[in-house]
Length: 276
Image (cartoon, rainbow, N blue to C red; front, side, top):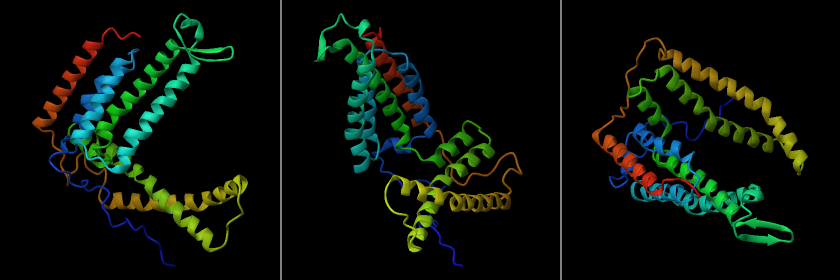
């Protein structure tokens, strides 16, 4: 029986990402530099309660992404449509759950019959939503400009994480797209054999149940192949391994960390105390 292979099977998932232009400086920074620069601000944002602080970090993150990252149309739609819409929805959602007894001294924002939404509740709800959005935007600085393999390589080379842990986690992460491809093959095979099973939620649930056994069998086969490939390359036989692709930590990475931490300190100092 001929085995169906993925159309992307010839692509090396551990190779460096597509080269970015010099203008997209975030793509050329060490992944650990991008994580280390934003981590202090992300931790401190958990404790702030005002609107100005997360709003400034949200704007700062977006400015960095627009200037130094490679933005695709899909990413732009996510940044400028999905995220603001999510902030509005989450902000009003949290506003409804705020105890009215603690904000009844503020002006009413919305009244429906005997129910009143106070301005203080809206401020608290949107402060929480903006805090979450600011943390997400800071995470996107590294998330949109870093590949998983580069982050693993940097962790092994600079943080001295054991390569047994790093590359094992990366191999497990590569199982996710493989499972997606296996599921598409199983669905195509079922359609060829006429196993449609009707329409509706119960029929869809029955079809999904029928995918479990072949998907597990494919996962076991793939895990065996990965284990054999790692054994053939003497994975774990030595304390260190020679890296094919180096991810150096340069002076520009240190400069980026210092500048971003300094900018974060300025923002926190301008908006302190963090009260509504």
